Image (tube, rainbow, N blue to C red; front, side, top):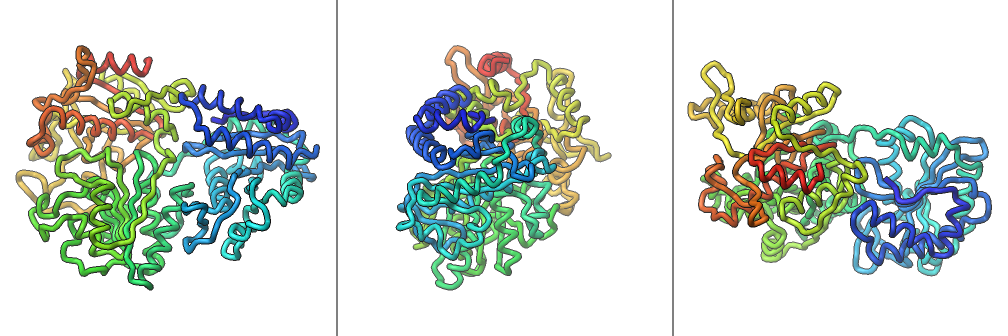
Length: 620
C-alpha cells in the first residue's frame, strides 16, 4: 500500500505549492479509516516542498516518485521512494527519509541521537534498516530488478548545528546512507540524479508497486538462527532503538554498577518476542550471562526444543535463589504473565513479589509486555507494577512503546477492528477490508472452516485451529489416542496433546524436542489438534481458525459481550471471578486468539447471535 505515485515533474508543483499535503491527507483518511495527525500533515507540507525544491533541476523529471510506501508485511511507511535508472541504464530505487530536525547531540547508545529530550534512531540508521528490510522481503529487489540506495534529508538542519549528526561515531552509517542538510541541496541533487537521471521504466514501476512479498520470517522458524548469530530479522524504528539501548546498557551496568530496568510495551505483532530473542542471542555471543524468561510453559518449551539451551530459556519463578546482580541480562518476554509471587503459583519460592526476584537478580532487566494479554487473575504484570518496583529498588528506568505492526499482514487496521469488535476499544477500522489487507472469513459450519484451512495448508501455508477453553481436557487413552473433547454437533477434535507430567497418571516429562507443545506448534500433527489460549499465546501461523465457545457470547438486547462461566472448563481461570471481570478477561483471551494469524483469521461461533453480530461488523 502507498498513498501517492506519479512522475517526478508532476509531483514538483504539487509539493512546492503545498497542495501535496492535502492530497496525502485525503488518501490517508480514505485508506486508513482515520485522519492523519496535524504534525504529519505539517511534515508532508514542509518536508516534501523542501525536497522538491532541492531536486527539481530537471534531471529527475522522468523518474517516478512514490510517497508513504508501506513496507511489506509491516505497518511502517517509507517517506519517499524515487525510481529510475542511472547513466548506464541500471534500474535503481532511492529511499529518502525526511526529517524536520534541526539539531541533536550524540548519545552513548549506538546509532542513536538525542533530539530535544528524546533518544531516537539516527536518520541514517533508520533509512538503512528500511532499505535492508525491503531488500529482504520484496521481489523487485530480492530478485535484482533494481538496486536500492538510501539517504536522509534534514531540510531544517544547517551546518552550524549539524555536528551531532555527523559525529565520528556515525561515520559508518553516513557512508552507507548519507545525510543531507539544508546547506547540502546541491549534493543531495547529485546523489539522487546520479542514480535515477535516465528515468523510470514502466516495468520497474510495476515491479515495485505490484511485486510479490516474500514470506515473513516466523518467530519459531528463525529462533535458532537468531541465537547462532545470523540475525534473521531486520529491526525497524523503535525495535532497533530498544535493541541498541539494551546492548549499551549491559556494558554500562557492568562498568558503573548502576543497574537498569527497561520496560517495553506493545500490542500483538509489534515484535516483542523478536526483540527478546535477537537481543538474547547477541548478548550471549558477546559473553554476557543471559536469561530469557517467560511465564508460558508452551512458549519456553518450544524455545528449548528448537535451540536446545535449557539454561538460556527459563521461567519467571527461577530467580528466587539467584545472587544479587549475578546475571548481566534478564529478558522477561510476555511480562504481563508475571505472578504476585513465585510461591503463589508454583508452591515454592521466596514469597517475595516475583518482579522483585527478577530485578534483584539482573544487572539489566528487560520487561516486554502487552497489558491486554493478561488473562488469569494471578497474572499481575503491568507497566505500573514494574515501574513501582524498579523505583523502589533504586534502578535506573527507561520505557518504550512499540507501534509497528508485523503480524496480521502488517495491518494495524485489522488489530484495531478486533479490539473494537470485542469492546476493548472504540476505534473502529475497516481498512483491512477495503484495502484487501487481511483475509477474514466467518463460517456457519466448523467443518467448512476446517476444510478451508486444510486447503490453504495443501498450498503450503501453516494453519492451526484454536478455541476458548469450553471443553474438558482429557488425558490420552491407554493406547495413546487423544480424546475428542472439543465437540460441536457431530464434529469433534481433540485438544493439543496434554504433557505427560500433567496426566493424572503421571509419568516423566518429555524432552523439549518431543514435548506435545513443541509438536503442536511445529509439526503436521498440530493441525488436527485444537489449541487454547495457553498453547497459542506467543505463537503465529499463516492462518488461524478461531472457535468462539459458549464462555463469551454477544447479548443482542444489551448490545455487549457477556461471560457465561458455566460454559468454561478452565477451573483456574474462573475461580473467584465475577461476571464483569470474567467478561473483560475473556475479551482478552479472544483478542489473543484472533491475532495469531499472519495472513488471515477464520471464525466459527457456537452462539448464533455472536455469529450474526460479527458478520455484521465484518460485512461478510
